[in-house]
Length: 251
Figure (tube, rainbow, N blue to C red):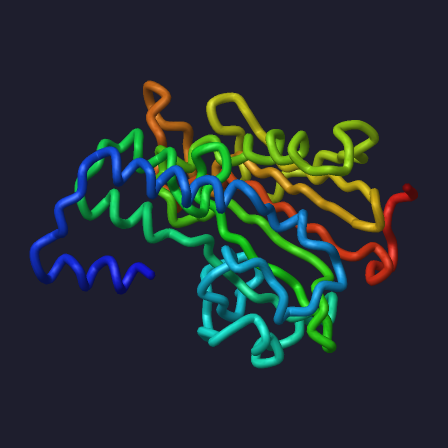
């Protein structure tokens, strides 16, 4: 999708009125907001993933894509994970509108509104988990570490919003604060290294949130954002079929 948009830049950009651009954007936004990863029932065959889940590729444990796939049906090309035995497939929502708006230098506020792969203004990475028979058994959502340091500074807060969005109820989460690893320091007086878990509707869900300076780093002056490599601010969400997890909290 991005290739087709960028190829169009080699010639003269087609003329579109703002109304047409926004109409296309509204349609794309409605599509991406209409189906969340947690709304696809576990057991759904890989060949029946929603049409707005695009560009599948083998996942990298919540990271960027690796081996491109022609369709989700090629899930078996991805290596099974040692911990779960499941195969991770990365995907992107349809980002044609977003990149058209970027190419035509639309207002940044409009671009931000129609970012294809974002939650609460933060870029995120989506992936699905399939068993050996190609049935959906889990999903992952991870804030994208490739965002600029300023944008990523409060990525840990995504976990709070997602916890409220998930269809498992906002109460009865079991949360624990992890001890700081050697050298980790609070950033601006704040330190977060928390894991929350819950089992509901047959789904074992974990939400991990991090916010701290890495070992060897010091708080910056005047509250300035440190370099991207100097701090950790992130959210990791994972939902797996509870029957495949050995130890899960009671429902």
